[in-house]
Image (cartoon, rainbow, N blue to C red):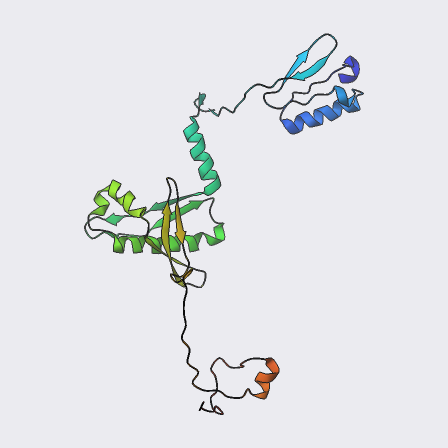
Length: 232
């Protein structure tokens, strides 16, 4: 068709941007000068006259998301929530908690999306179970009956959150900042950032063994004081 019509200008609009680029290359292969081929982005306009075609001022554009099942516009707040879930992931916890003793009754089901791969899901589930048990052990009596107070209690600066590393070692994280949609925790040692003064007392001195002298340090985990000499 391009070879038959031989247009002076060519404005491909078929499909997505990569389709437009391919279509423009087709125009070049069919003999249309590359300088006469225009590829437009959203909001760009062209002015057409009998002899010319040129780009002019752009107009403000945006994106409107449509629910294809209801054929209605999706609210911006819903779109933002979906984008947040897509970028940050989501965790769903299903647990039966007895209001009387505030303990978990039955197994806990944890499902996560967009956070860890399938190989780490079991580890994440166990970590969340430990966190939930710890929370219920230290929760105020009757707090489960007041959902508003419960939300405020979870978002307090200074709240301790226990977690475990890959070796099974318990590490406590402290909530240090609370935002509208997130919290910031600190997992450093409580002495981190503080000046720590150590007072040392040398109780004995000995000469290194031949092997220690060759290796440049102690060989065994426990020192050998067999040949040690007391300091006068």
